[in-house]
Length: 243
Image (cartoon, rainbow, N blue to C red; front, side, top):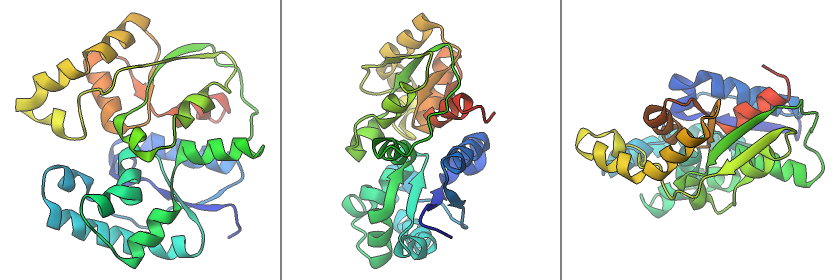
């Protein structure tokens, strides 16, 4: 286990609903020389937090950070493909739930979004750029949770490294789903109205795929437009010829 070892925090989405996204993330990291560890890990508690079940959410945070903290203390980055679950461990468990303990402190200090990690690698001249040409125009929606990370739009910069890819960035503030908000029957119409400009952009472009970092936003985009929505890592995976 060397210095290029990272821990993949897959979250519930990649573990249960988007297994292919998790597999592609690991393969892209390995293509760039990382050893990827995937220890046992539970839910971060974000859905509970989002629905006001704070005590239950804190118990989930405690169990998860106990699983991940030993790796963080060894100096390994904890890499997330979910912007929302990554943000939960980076900031929200502390700022919203008021969790203050050594395990969370250790994990949050090493928590990094996968596109953030890869762009940092590129900035150091260490990212593999053996990309195949991909002739594609894709709409890209930077999700709300990404703004909470305060890291800009690393996925946008990474996709622009791929020859042939033209990225059309959405200026919509929100897709409307807001985690679990738009999944509720009584909030459905509100959620669809909030995301209307984004959905119009996607429909007008009529792309092969749309791109977004957040899983619930991807599901919302696909539901509203019929266009498959993918994580940015899936586009990198394709350009690397790993598929």
